[in-house]
Amino acid sequence: MMNCQDCREEISAALCLPEEQWSPEIQQHLAECAACRREFQWMQKAQAAIRDDQPAELPKNLHSSIMLAVAVGKLTLTEAKTETGSIEKLIAIKQKRKKNPWRLWTAAAVAAAAAIVMMVHSSGILIRPDNTSAEVGIADTKIADDSAAATGNPNQTEADPKEVSRMMLNPSAPQEPTACEPAAGSEAIDSEESTIATKAPTLPPTTLIAAPDEIYGLTTELPIGTADPVVRSLQIELDAALQEPLLAAAKSHALGYELLPATAEGFVIQLKIEGTGKELVELLRGIVIPDGYAASLPVFSLLPTVDSEKAADQTEISVYPIGSESVSLETETVYQLIFQFQVK
Amino acid sequence: MIQDETAELEQLVTTAQTGDVEAFEQLVHLYEKRVYQLAYRMAANPDDALEMTQEIFLKLYRSLDTFRGESTFNTWLYRLATNACLDFLRKRQRVEKASAFSLNQLDMFEKETEPKDAAPLPQDLLERSDLQSLVQEALKLLSPEHKLILILCDIENKSYDEIAVLLQCQLGTVKSRIFRARSALKQIVISRAELFEDYLRHTDQKGGSE
Image 1 (cartoon, chains in turn yellow, blue):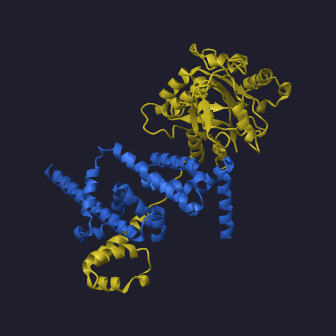
Image 2 (cartoon, chains in turn purple, yellow):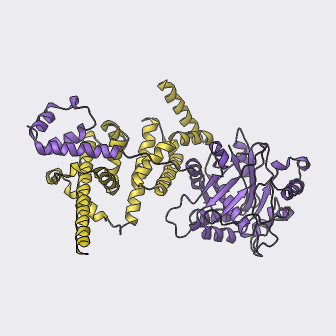
Image 3 (spheres, chains in turn purple, green):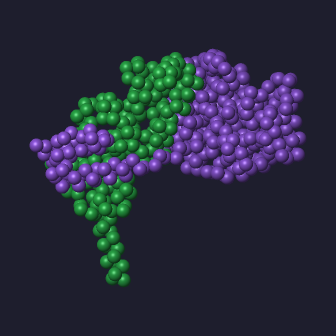
């Protein structure tokens, strides 16, 4: 005859089975033992309570934050090499992209983008789409011209202003070094090719147009070129707790940057950053694993803004790792990272 | 139909193994919700759940090329996910030594859940209207291993065979672990119910004396 101990282990296992499949021994024991019957009742109720647990609400940025984490996790730093100015690796990686060469994303890039935005923010520069203001409309034309001049693409003088990045500079911006002005000792910025820092001053004047502390301590909207008459915007949203370490990281790595014109391939804004592998990785580490944070991820999220009227038409930001393999950045090699925000 | 889906998934995995980012992203799309739900139930808070989910997919990315098709991809990913969840929670437990409901207490419960020492169930516990919330709370306090096995069995509706494959242990071990997990859950519920009664009594006395 089955004892109580054996019976309870068996009924625990039998809970998931229909009663007719229970062994005769269990059924007999339960018929004879009130304590085990009560135990069985308890197990049934507990199981029902566990099963009643409702599914969790999914985070809005679940997908992008996963892809971002994967991309960040792929970056490693190799031993120092003396060569500088090499971007062949990135170009090669970029060429691996089959369908859309513009979809070169890295968590590094995105993290760096956040850093750039932070730098832009700390310099008093904010960027956002705005085709509702006549004043900005005039600025758009000028920016289109200036952007074309900066990139050396004459076709872009005729570009649709909606497809051109817009920047407005705050005349009363703080006097601290801006992202356009490399910090002293940042020799990488002075390397011979593609010196973004020297290009950056050609960017048009900008104006501070929004309070930087709207959401979680920082909100920066980036312009998106689009053929759609409704200009959409992206929002980089940072946790307030991370603002300070992020600002510190950004300020300590005043790398050059350039804002490139949007392309006609989608709602895209591109940013380019240049620095040595060491600088870039340190920059990333400064952002991704700030002091005082036990967890490295998530550090920040990229969220689309959604017009209240167009909530159903929510857009999603895609984050793509570089190419198909882990990327190893050499410490002293200067890299350009081109990254973009694309609204699907 | 199912065969088509299986073949499609196999193709997707094979493509992702070659380093195709878009294929990998499709895999993420396919599994992110399920993985997040598992992580959420294990972590019991959204921040940790998101972090666990990210870690799981990063591990997936790093180890995808080690998948040899000896089990289904579902099983393989689930095993990776459950291991990652356990690692994460063990790590978190080490950090949270000063938790109000300490691990020592949980260990004590675990020791008390040997079948021969199983505490009797209070007569009125089954009738309590708050039994469900007591169970839900108790579930959060279970050890990661016990919590995982109950989630797999009672929420994910995995069979004992599937759990044995996932956890790479014998069927008998699964049966025994589930029983122990249920016993541990019961001990926590009893304890919390008693604490709650004490609290109510204390509040009543206090209220009565005022």
